[in-house]
Image 1 (cartoon, one colour):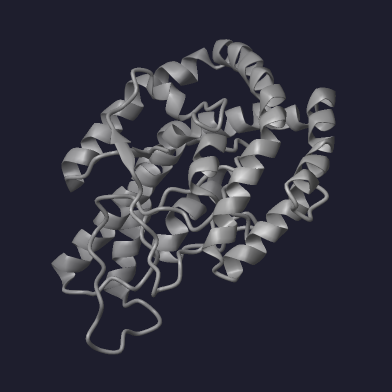
Image 2 (cartoon, helix red, strand yellow):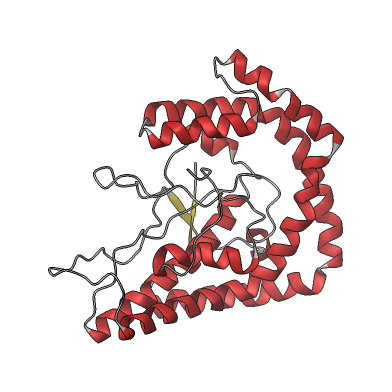
Length: 292
């Protein structure tokens, strides 16, 4: 069972596959792929969202806190949303039926945990992005392999996702690589070492973060929503001291990173809002961001 959120080191082509794979079946994700959608009889909820681009578009690409990743999630999900509409429109023009697949969803980042969100909502299947194409169901037996014409539609969807991702993907990859060593800092290791005691104090039988997330996976597999919500609150409480150490280190890294990558950041600030606006107009959609 995969982890309940994205890990930010899933980058480059792998990250793009994760963004489009659920829609077009393009690739298989690694072990920390997002949790699958809730069972069919319990569909995932539509997320509570906010609309409107931030003043600095680069903030969507360079998160330093878990709360910041709500912007990053919205940006990633917007690429999936645009790709979904591209496939849907192409299929409609051709009289084809889009294969059943998970709809666009917001997916969280494990290494930048949004503790306030987890405390409020717990762990569980990721929430649906509003404005996705309506689900369609074929009245006939749909072939397991898409027709050549429909495969062209899936290719079109991938291309649309790349239009957006190529603007910010390289900078995002460089940023996540920059903050990856934070977890190896002595003060962070010391804070993480105390996680087991905190979990024990909350009557959770897990010696460390990995064991805790395994327990979360078990509860999700068992469709135990009550336990998954409760574990979110425990995780938020026990990880608070860890994030208190990690966040200043990420902020410090951001200062030097913004200087060394000034040209790339300037490009993102100019081109990202333009491309988002273009895709919003093309597919009559809006970029949105999850909120607690």
